[in-house]
Length: 307
Image (cartoon, rainbow, N blue to C red; front, side):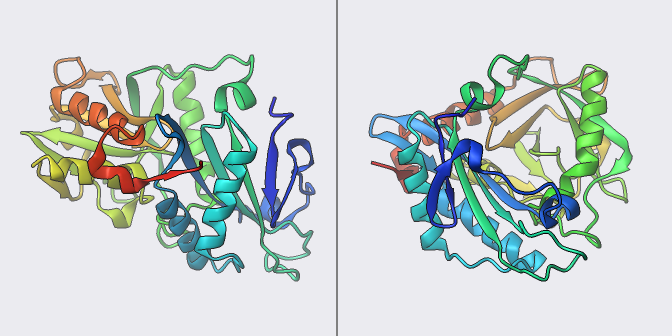
């Protein structure tokens, strides 16, 4: 898996199998790895990276929030991502990782160098391979009540940092064993926040509702769908959402880089709406798919072509 891929590492390419760090590296031991994930789509003009500057700006912001000393600027990272996609034909995903790779005696590193790794690959052929894995077209979503979502007093929700995903991983793992596809996290006050790697939207009376940006990872797909909806004349409201608001929804869907617009048809043991993918979800999913594949001229500036 991935054996013919090249990975960008601090300005040069190395082989996939050589992209390693020590098991005692600071980022592994302390969870300080910052990262972002970007999609690459096949279009009539060739490979196109969706909203690359926005993803990288989010990575830079994560490093600023966490005090990680990122050396590369936005233009350097954009160029590196384009180079990496070109060096890895057939890629549909990019993952950028900022790693404190040194072995350290304390939580504060003596060696502050932040290594940058950029991988471009195809998730199915390079990562999943022959292992059993299925992403169903519609979601059965469990509300997580045992563990609160990201706590702002520990790590701000807007920071996309490895340590933030430990509790959500545990919750999602348990939900998968119970037959659900994903899990929805609540904050300490019981308000809805997000899924571990996706944002949530509620459709009610023709309007879109989603939790405030201060409580969630600021998803690039989330922002894109909100813009598409507003341009279509749909009211978009960011407000606190209770579990009962989700139960009363006409439609529910998740948004994520890896899944686009992902309909939710079951919440815990309850059917959402009439049990079918709703009209607004269907419309937004269709428009989003046209946007990312270069078929909607209104949003061409969101695509970075690699050729």
